[in-house]
View: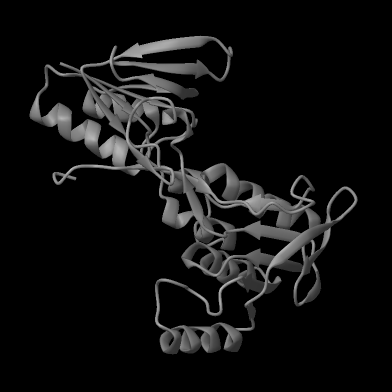
Length: 270
């Protein structure tokens, strides 16, 4: 049996390892557009703050080590761009050579995860604007903060990731403002009473929190100098976008797989 897995972080690597434990004769391959697999996403903000000192501490397994431990073949830098479910073929692009490739399978596991949902505002291309999803993102934030001597930062999004990043930027001595379009922090996670309690805790720690506020533009010429919001202009040298996520499923749009708002509809077994 040939099993192809698209995506190599938590779900993809765990599924692949389990398959090989169940059936050593199975041919299992992971393809991923990233250079890293099996990394500790929850640790990324703490690398920014310095609690995690080295990049290597974020990586659970390298592709080479993982393959040796499990017998799973891993191909990095391969982005899935289409799926023919009738022929059981995944169409992909080699990001290094830009060559088009095809991968056949008997069984397919889609574990592509999600990407940060980025607001459509001016200035996203400026130096100093970051996301927080991969080890390279965390490295970029920490390096920029150190190299530029950042004094003020704005975090757009008051979910778990946004607040953890804010906490760790504050630990670096940076003045942090968190903004969110929702009326409270941690929307859809905490009830209003608990959210108010958490907000007071953040404010007590020196983190400014502005809810019910929308980012309208990121200002600057070559690098960030401020964020224009519905509540006024916030001077800063760094912006972290943490305003939710979107599924990495665009490559399935013409696959015939039943979708709902970018998510895959599954049966009762899932």
